[in-house]
Length: 485
Image 1 (cartoon, rainbow, N blue to C red):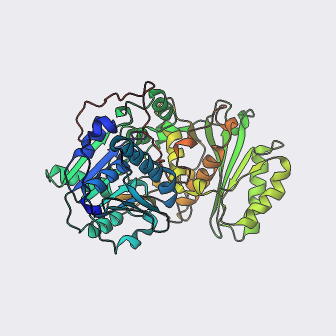
Image 2: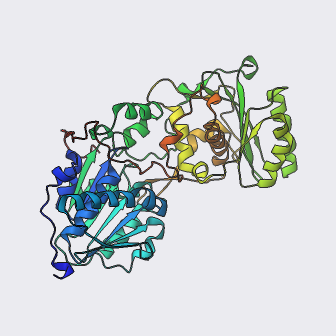
Image 3: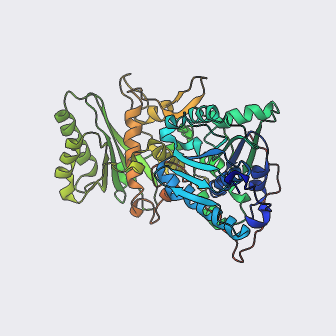
């Protein structure tokens, strides 16, 4: 029998793989463009890889592609799920459908002639020459590669006639932009070629509700709505739209709070440099108490100003933590020489996780407007509200820091570097990200760093579909599948 004569097995997906309702709706849709818009832990990667298996079976002799944000995501998340699905398929049919697995080709060859290629978004241009029948993309809303570029590239490659051609994607929303906006617009037009299934984290009956509640306790309101409830919120032009002067600016005098630890964030600059000084209370509240804003004539001038400023604030008690910009190593070595001997933690952001700006912004947003409780990041009333027009302090920067816009004028998730408002917020971000490593700065409990991707991309894609304790499938999700735009 020729390889392509092998037909797809007659399987009951519900019985063999036990998807819950929202997953089943996505898997069984016949639309040419399908989107599984889901919250964290909703089983996005599990669903998308199962869909890739189904596509390979129903389109014999056809090449398809499975794409992840990075090669790491593919190796750590998507390929393991593929292996699990094929093992389940072999157990159900009594036949191993994989003919050959090739790491060199980055492909899985099946006995029915189908091929599943895998690729990372960061090398999307290498896909342009492929002739595909279908393509699946995971977490494209959180990729560093432009999601519309990914979609347009893949759509141009899907040109091989087959029984079930098309594009399928799975992601948590990152605002009403890009691919999510495209599907929303097509949905409003009732275009039958586009289908979207929306699943919140709560829809997954296999996910422990205590896990979701733990996420909720570490998130801002906006982040909870996007990453748990899977709501595609309208993009905000302000990076810190949660910041409100009437809520976050409070009376505060540093000299009256000797019980607090000092945390310093520093953004070095050749002609514009800013540092912020934060007092952290024993119960984990952060108060930005002072700032140093300079247009120094030289690095030596800023060093002298910085040391005098820090020593004047902290006195005999050395800062607990200084988090500087990593871009100028010689300045950070100077900090180590001056303050490292005083047992101050001098911690530039060196890991990819820490350097990823989106992660640091999310941590500040979480502190400004948590789902549970009062804000954990405040600003002293004495901080300046005005600036000379060249470099702004922290309070005006919190209000004026903006996202860039795309070709349609929609705010992206990339902050604008205007060389005026970005220095102070960068200094604050360094302090917050470095400080998230220390329980002493968060009332004995580390904040939700585990919520961010290990490779520095947010949120993580490893959301395995777990089973209930008795191993049985419990169907969940009885609401309207349509996204709440």
